[in-house]
Amino acid sequence: MKFKIQPTDVTFGAIVSGIHLSQLTSDLLDDIKEAFLKYALLIFPGQNLSSKEQVEFAKIFGEIEYLVDNMETIPLSNRSSNGRIMSDEEEQIKLLKGNEIWHTDSSYMPRASKASVLSAKIIPDFGGQTEWADARAAYDSLEKHIKEKIDTLNATHNYFVSQAKIGHQVKVGAAYGFYEGKPPIYPLVKIHPETNRPALYVGRHACNIIGMPEDEAEELLLFLNAQIVKSQFVWQHSWSPGDIAIWDNRCLLHRARPFDSSKERLMMHTRIRGNEISETALNYR
Ligand SMILES: [Fe+2]
Image 1 (cartoon, rainbow, N blue to C red):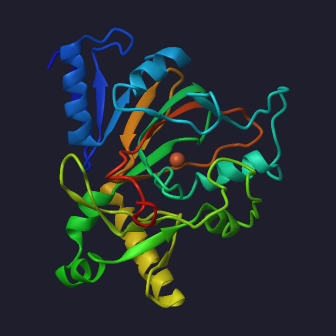
Image 2: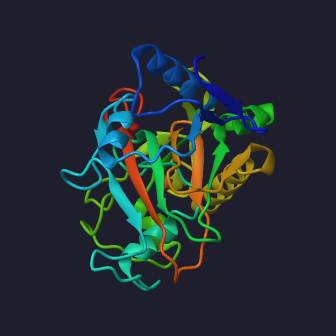
């Protein structure tokens, strides 16, 4: 390795240094892709990439998933385009608030995301960290009879429902993910298409289990989510401006941590599209 990889002290994730992501050679690309599959989360402190450089980095891992037409990277911010810090009552803030609950990106879409890139631009003094949790290690830790029970079960993922649970009623077409049409169905256990490791595939958008009474499904989803976010499977990163991270949505959950909403937080986000075969919902194939 021509750069330094410092694994975290949990079951996944590594901090990468001694490399600049705007100057990658083909052998470094291969090493980074290998590290991404091994650690599932890579954090590169102090990169200060431009949006263009961030997109070029993201494209190493696949095609861009467009959340807004013609925008490969989008700002995640509590400041509006006219420079005002938005209040908790505004739509955009209600969507950002949803990100504070454990989820995997785009599981509410007919084709779920492969990976996400996030970089820090403006960071409040307190809070605003990101946390990730290892859904592979959580699956491995389950008792055999639970694995047998869930191995063949499938759940619907629905962004309308997950926002409604935090009191936010969203109209069709209001933002990315709020589309007309049937909510996607994904297996509770996702086999990673590149490593073949099984992982729990749930998070906040999973809301229903096919063929199971509602209250029983709710209880099982709560249980599975709780297994993933046990402290031994969770890693938190406190951002400094210039840091950038990439993670594997196929096997990790993540969430943002709260911060003082009177202070600005600006992150830049690029999402990498899932594979047509392995990330397309069962009912969209
Ligand atoms: Fe997210």
